[in-house]
Length: 365
Image (cartoon, rainbow, N blue to C red):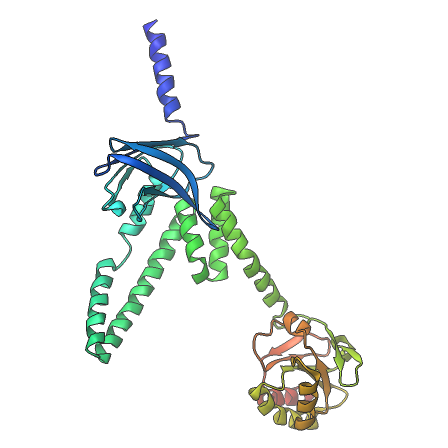
């Protein structure tokens, strides 16, 4: 009978430490009563997860979490929270409301890892010193010292970025790494995010941080695919626009010729300055093997027609007020130019008239 009772006691102990639930046992050194709030960071802001009453400084939260994530613990009327990773384990927190950032958290390996990341963040003390020195130099209008401090700060930022990246890469199998990756994603190259995401997907599956990173990647992936489709050797996207006579013309109508596409507008000074040079190019090379297609992004026909007349442009003129063609070519600024071969494949991008002349001479030989 004694052994049987001992077995039940062990069963109860294991149940209280189940990996499917958590228990947060907290103790405030300077707070005897009140309310504490457990909150989570969501896309739309902080969301309330649970509340607990403080009795003789102690409080308890119990529940379960599907995924370990960063949580915030607020004491009533205290602005600064305790920041920690909540996971299904027995977590003990000891805190003082005057120094919430110094709270001691035990029982959460991910919180230990997050603390390690923050504790080893480079140049914290040096940054404080440099900030004071900069303010002193600024008050004295000491430009040389200010520039020197700013140069040193750039080095510090580079060191921090390296530290951040290295930490995330070495922790791309846990929620801390996923959280940090999500927060630094905008400073990474596409390939770096892609590699991190592959590792995180394998380790964490459908973790909320992984899903958020995937959603962030979707437009980047689309842009990358669009850029690849516009690389040298690829067939240029076809488009159909209206010419000066109101006729619809397509890029594919010019297959069999080398085609120079020039996205421009009447209001674009660099475009207008380039036009006289293109006039000379067209005089020299126009014929059965070469054509220029100018695609105007002007919103009004009047501005477009007037600029064509003023600049004496005699080649194919098309109007793209809705930026239909410009969007397919990912035009971000103008002039924006492309040279296609006779099969409609991209030969050169962002080529100006002087370089275009040399290329066309080479094609004649």
